[in-house]
Length: 180
Image (tube, rainbow, N blue to C red):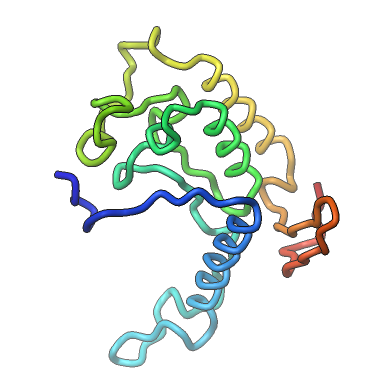
């Protein structure tokens, strides 16, 4: 059914500043939930969230899953936009999570004209339909993975926003001094 994940959700396009703001809010919220003293249960016992060990690099970065519409469906079939999204995902802190089928351009059982929602987003990986795979997208996905594996800064480095054009620099707190 369409509301399997609790109702409607909205896909909102954002520019670079919007992404920077939203991503920063997620990182700050995640870090604040992991500071010492926060995260105690009803008996006052500190749980794993309150040990102060979490870091944005522990965030699992995903943009589609079995609980959402597939990425390519949300992008209305724009494989070039998905390539950019995959590259962006590999460049931010945290392990990238690519939902099975995204790397070959899987849209869902009903295609672009379907709802894109549950259960159609849960279609199995099309192992038996390799002729339908987007080979260009798969090659790009492999190259992005290779790049992340080869570059230490992408696996363990921080994230610092840099100014472009005439913008002033917005230097967040760097995770470490590793630079790319």
